[in-house]
Image (cartoon, rainbow, N blue to C red):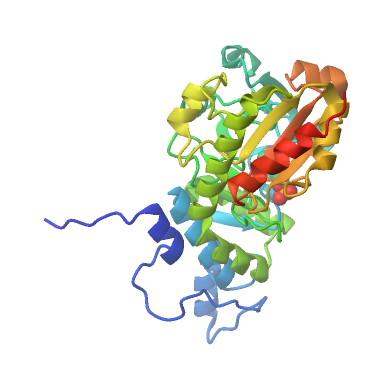
Length: 395
Ligand SMILES: *Cc1c(COP(=O)(O)O)cnc(C)c1O
């Protein structure tokens, strides 16, 4: 009997899906938008390979394909497609699965860009949508209509880090005849595997944990060949194709992704734990804390920890939160997540500004909420920075 050991996550990250292959250690960065052939047959053969073929970059490209293959192997999906941004991936998926007159059920609050996309679709493409409260899954079933074609999920949700049972949600979506997509950006493809939990397509802003160094914009869609065929069609039609350099940089980043994600997640848990005990903090939002309402389900479906993102409410409201963020030095004030650099931002002034105080109240987002994406710096430096910033709050 042959005993083939399944290589571990870190090994797959470093070596990619072809362990033991000889040749270049790093995937060659091919700067070529088109490829030449000795015969029409050869050309058609490459064309027919779709994203895995080298025919013309808008269809497929060797450096992009190598990155897609490594990404797929990390999540355990059959295949992957790379995009020039996360919104490129999400909008291509929606364009792929929705026709005029179709209805979408989407968890609320989802990423702001996705809300804007749904609004765009409503005004220009004849899509309709209903938002369902991420905290109350028992209300979701009533939102489905006979023309609902897509269930779009996101867990955990920024910035309150609400999580729900993804396997249950995927089952509900399928029972209603929907394609089930999930924005898995916050957890990352190694932090949570929604395809194994029953989702059809997982979507990413690769700008975040996948790229991991705040130096590139990219996106990804993962799923079976069959599930991604319409997404590939939308990508070739509308043209959001990653460039070869970004693909190469992502492939390089993937080699250290398990270490980066594990370190960021561990820092996030430690900061959340210490913030919870701090006198200047009213409330901490982190699914890794047993006191978080989603802790049990997060522990079941998240791997490698509970993600890099946490939120905390500063006593004293929006003004006090602003003072804290302004006083931070090591943790930089900026609007991204999942990078090696720790970042802080203010939900009420940035990501959740548009919905106003009433909208924030409904979504359970306190005015004084500071969102932190934990990077991989020394934990004592991050904590000292937060302590001095909290001490800087006047009154
Ligand atoms: C950043 C982000 C996006 C959008 O990705 P871009 O790469 O900026 O287009 C989508 N979803 C989530 C959860 C994000 O954090």
